Length: 242
Image 1: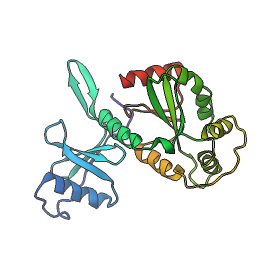
Image 2: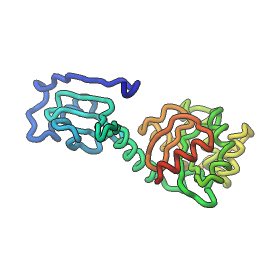
Image 3: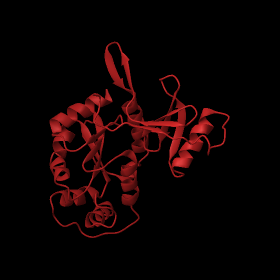
Image 4: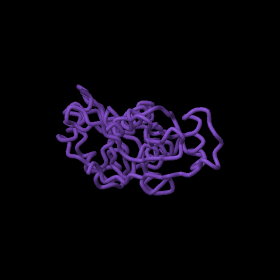
């Protein structure tokens, strides 16, 4: 009814193997560690629903657990107020994504600024992606509408792919904008190497839930998968800022 996202309810049954913990935080952390020692837990706190705790993972993803850590939920939590349904999980995830994106230095992006910027978008991009190329052809229109476009790298086929090598060449170019224009119009980009953030940005994309390109992050952290026409995208992006 609310989403096509699968909601998992897992009765963990770990009480016999997990030592008795003094606090819900400790119990939940012990359970999550038993499930996956490398699970990147950022914070644990009581959720708006009484008796349910909210676990924030690195990148903004959210899980919900019982206080004793024996039950785990993955899915959306909605709050119904004044006749409207508010997706609390999506809002929390957006805040987490925004935090990660805002931490990227501008010097590590390929930026196409707007003369009179009203907002910005951050685009996880590949060079051989058809819809990425289509979106890039509309960057001048986005800039005209007041949207600054900030690119970060996401080679869909992994760091061993030809696209990853081309992205490295773009980031290592003396003129990144010109190199990106070449790549997006399927022209050869002069090969170049340097210390670059491509692998780091690819890992970040995976962490925040990027599965394909283009993946567009609005200023408020909302993640939009896929291409949108410039007028529609600009409208959504500006509304997300206000």
